Image (cartoon, rainbow, N blue to C red; front, side, top):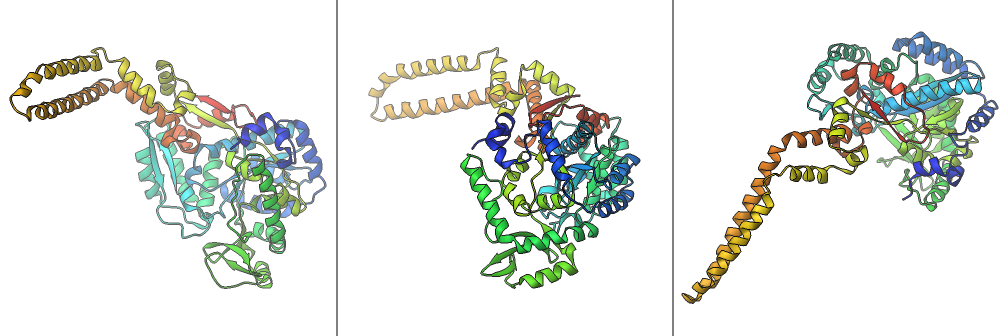
Length: 526
């Protein structure tokens, strides 16, 4: 399969059809998009009023509240990103997304000469409990220490889930978080945020707001009733146009796959691309001229769904196909900041946007980075390794390091002994005259001796590896730090892994990274 990230970065014209607002690396794309948004109308007053009330609850700073006030103005645009409400913000890429959004909004505010505000859409409507219930913190041994939520999620939106008790979280953080000059203050802050939050979405918002407080960031919680009412007309339109939307998705997906890319969205059939909470979140389907909920046989008709929508819009929510369209409907979205997987599925949505009469926003790839602590930098230099070496796996380097430190020639000595044994048994061949079975006895006995010799050789190498414990530990710590759980660091480790070690100065380091707009990996040296 072709890599959409690389193609977008190097040959944008090949994928221009799928990203109709243009190349994110060209300023003209932003200027054209801004001109298009000026032709659209938004419920700015309700948006600003609701966001202001929500952020006062969050204890947002004056900078964020000023940006919310700017949303009332017709010329104000938004750069948006989004993510599920992970524990204490989840993996590092959440912070990278937020900082890309903040930086890009600031850059475009200057370039366009008009207000551009950063917004983080917290996907609290999602119900993928397994995706958000666990996070990992780099512990004092240099390994990922788990911090997880109890319970099963019950199929309800994560934003409706209660925040765990501080006692439950504290015990896990105490085990996972290394001792440092910042540890006590970080734990104190985490306790304050945990006890303040009313649900998982708010817990996420409070934690990320604390990390980026210096820059200001607007948070959007789609579960707030006012936002549900604002989105209701689009939900009604989705129910009416679901066949057209499904066909638009299928057509653009075929075009994407025909170019050699992999489809990220894989419909299973009959999707209306909306969910209904009953209270668990169930997909609305349409088959045999009738609506139904996934896993239930009871039929629904369009009138009944519309009546429920008018009465209780909070029970409806978009899926992966329609959430970006709801965002477009609510906000003057200059650009959206996706991760690699999101970029892939957004490529399938251009015709869906057009079906609703919209143009998809600019897709600006989030920052990608790997953090290198001083000890990891030292180990890379000492072992003459590159990041590429670590990403490819260090098993061969590990074996080579052990063998290079073998100053006693283990294999050669064993080989010489094998030659002597073979020679010794050859000299015993005349004894075969004694009895017809002697030949077999010699063969079996020699095999047993060789088996024991092989066993001895394995034990010697085990002992040699113990002698090389320091270098092997160094290599293991490199893998655990840079590729934890055989994955990229930014997808596993929580930001607190480094905030606990280096304080909020770590976030300053993230803010200093250059905006590349192409997912190229930056390095954060600590």
